[in-house]
Image 1 (cartoon, rainbow, N blue to C red):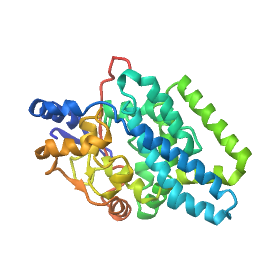
Image 2: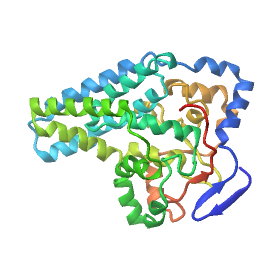
Image 3: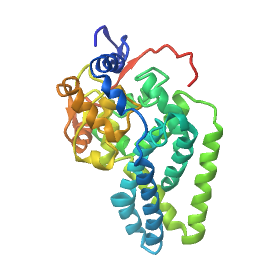
Image 4: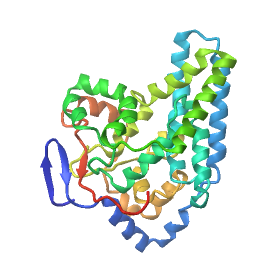
Length: 323
């Protein structure tokens, strides 16, 4: 990536994101990859099973002591919730029912949101399209930390705290960096979510609701699965802004580790991303990749050269077409 200039402590570049050009090259060389685009027919059934599993868990934990509520929230429920967050990510790309049934995908994402305890899916969709269209874009890609985060969370202890608080920064940062008007779908998402929370509370008491919310917050912070937040775009090697991970945690995260492939082809569902890597192996095998999300978290905390500032940023021209 040429024309690199340092401004502040982020690394600013003045080239387009690398995924655009690589997508063109791969499709020109391997047009059969287009056949991988489209819905995943199994996703809706897997997600439905996960939602039902969490509802069953709510019943099973209702009489446990508080210490076991938090234990199971971290060790089990949170893992399902984080996996569900990555399913919602796929659903935001319309891979549950396809682009022709976009509204069905939005409604189904609200259903997938139910185990979270907090409304999430509609707001995620609203901002995630910007993450792909304006990767690293200043004031546009809210996945990039703020200057305050980069400046303050710069020591091992502070970075450790930042990881724990990551769900709060992830949820609140968009309101500061790029606030957008509340949509009807977000209101619908919140009404459905809090109604179901109330029903669970009415039936089984407070503990199941705490179990759901605690699992969401704990497993999006300091947790092995949450290593993907750091692994995906933090610059562990200078000049490389997206990384893949091909390890076993992909089995429970809808292949979220295939992140380079995902940004190259966001309309291909996670279940088919390994086929992209296999078909166009020469484009991916020699790129930097992570071997362990746990190691990513360790290095993020203890490597002095890595922190919230370790992101590539660029000035992006706002697209004129409807988002």
